[in-house]
Structure formats: structure tokens, C-alpha cells
Length: 285
Image 1 (cartoon, rainbow, N blue to C red):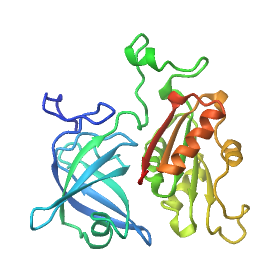
Image 2 (tube, rainbow, N blue to C red):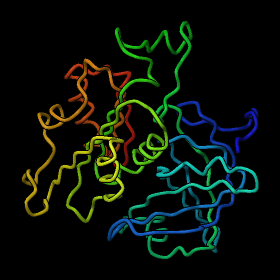
Image 3 (tube, one colour):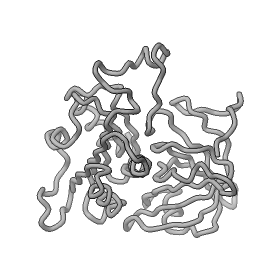
Image 4 (cartoon, helix red, strand yellow):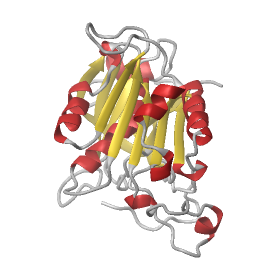
């Protein structure tokens, strides 16, 4: 179900996408991701259809009226369109921060049937399939496709995730997996240890089915017999497994600020077009 045209009072995000009003939502189902993570499947009447890669704001209101707002990536958008007789729904993947105001409640305390407020979906740049801008448009003039590249929505896709930054990238993989045909996908996921690898079985299944090439780097503890010792992702490793710059992939990088900045710098230095390196980050500067 898609919303109507935006009115003059509708707020927009930094990418120009309409944010919209706060909507009442209800927790319909939940599942574990790791010791500190949880999926939340929310029913959101009136939600506009979401695109893979977008995020939403969630708002909690205390009994004394105090409100706290946080943003979370959408890990599944497939049911967000709703349909005849169906309420739109989205899945969020939330990691508990021990000093957080919102995430401890979402991960440890929120129960099926509990209410929450949602605003969005948000994001016009970090999404797949990406928008193909018309030749001669203002955006195309500022950010033209690289010479020899396929249109942005038909180009191969490289996903790079740090830890819980895999959430919006899983949403993209789920959309890609539902297509009979589509561009090549690769995922590089950097995580602390096996217990921190969200959606592990699903990602391994995509690799087996040929939906995407999947490479995992463990930074603190690798499984026994793993072919690589634990340690931070290096520039050489990134360039060895990622789609090469001369194939002009669209690259989506999501994770903590330092991780995203480092990976984006390596990619651009290796010849990837900056207009095709799209980033989403979290954490303090």
C-alpha cells in the first residue's frame, strides 16, 4: 500500500525523501539474532511501501511524557506494501546498547502486542534497486554514470557490512532472492565472532543457492578450522574479494563510522566511482 502525494507540511530527510507522520505500530512477532540482538516484526497501518536499504524512526513515550527517538534499518520490506485486507509490516533488527535509552527495551522487554510509534520509511540514496535518473536530468548531470557502466539499477552490487550493519543489506538480498533474474551480488561481512553473525543460516543459504557470493571476516575469534586468522579487515582483503572497479558496481557500505569511512576510502582509492559508493553509518564521531 503506497501513500498519497506528499503535502507541503510533510517533512523530508537529508536525501529528500518524505518522512511523513508518526504512525501507531504493534509488535507482531520477534526472534533472536544473537546475545545482544533481536528482530522485531511490526504491523504499521498506513505505512508507505518501503524500499530495501531504507530505515525508520521509532519513538517511545514514557508514562511521564518523556519521549526518545532512534533510527533503525529495515531488514525486511517484502510485506510493507500490505495488500488487500493486509496491514503493512516491516522487520527491524535491533542490537542492544547497554547504555541506550531505547534498544534495551526493544531487545529485552517489548512483548508481542505492545505498541510503539514509527515514522518513515526514510532514505532515497541508500536503497536497492536504486533510482535510475533520466538522461538530461539535473541529478544525472551532477552524478553521471561512469563511462562504460551499465545503468545504476542494472549494475552488479557489492555489499560491505560491519557487524549489525548487515541489517539493511539483508533486506536487499531478500529482494534480490525473490527475483527470477537480476544483477550479480556479493556480500563481505566483518563481525567479531561467530555468535555475532546475524542471519548466518540465511546468508549461507544465499551463497549455496547462487543468490550472492558471501565472504565473512572474523575480527576477534574465528571458528575452528576457519581459513583466516581473526583480525581486522585489511585493504588487500577487501579488494581481493570485492567486485572490481572496472565492473562499475554499486557498492553499499553499512556499519560503524570508522569502519564505513575506512572502507569507502579504500574503494575510491582503488578506482571505484564515488557516486556509486553509498554509505550508511551509525555511532559517534
